[in-house]
Image (cartoon, rainbow, N blue to C red; front, side, top):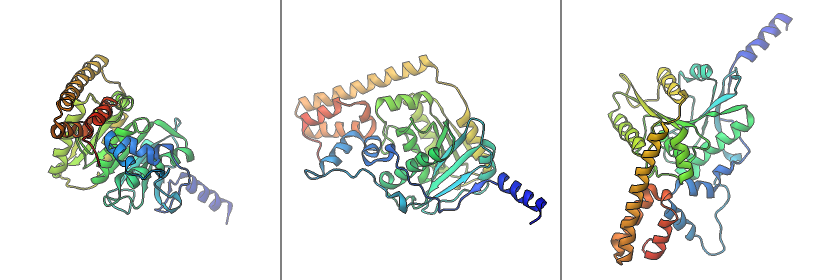
Length: 337
């Protein structure tokens, strides 16, 4: 090979993005993705306790839900690393085969974002035991392999994967600074998107951003986005915004929609402190009212209505009601597997 041709090949290799197929492997386990961590963050408090009580005496929950040696990931790394480090977009696919969506590579290059998605993580897989765990393991391993800017770590997904992404953004605001929800969302504070414990929820309120994108013709997704965005405001999270793509149906966001979502996620700015404080005070008053109603039902021995009230509270904002909720459940002895 001549010197000129060798130099040209070297330049092409340097300039070309590192695009791996669906055979990337990782070997490090994240403390955020242990079974205990997943149960504590993604299940309601009473459901988590009930699940643990189901284990026979002397048995313990396995530490890890996955054997990473058997898992494969699709990884895209832009050739040029931004001065502050790469951003990271963890993608949850609705399909077991996860690919980089068409047209996304140039946008990822522009924003300096690494893309990673797990294989065998589609809608038919367990949300907690596989889909959430795989997304968390992917984030952990990419952070340790590349220089990552922690302020630009986002979670995303399409359709059913987008709904999982919302749960991850809500439960892990200490990892993900926001979410790009593509044609799939749920209201928060309603199962399955229950609120996390107070310190995590306040972190979510203070710094997370949620970007909704759906095709204008995908009426189901657009309607769900409206309800989900409204629920953010009810629960004092003001960093959400939505966009619709004209002429698009239920399909993965195109390059333009991805760029718009990333612009939304990149917008700086903390919520107005007075507005946030007033909203949190209202939520606390409402929570205390619901706890008082449940307490009265337990005290009156009305087991059926007490059980209903406790389970409804547990399935929405139970993590904010602890330890009072656990104490009421023990007193009532009406919440059991």
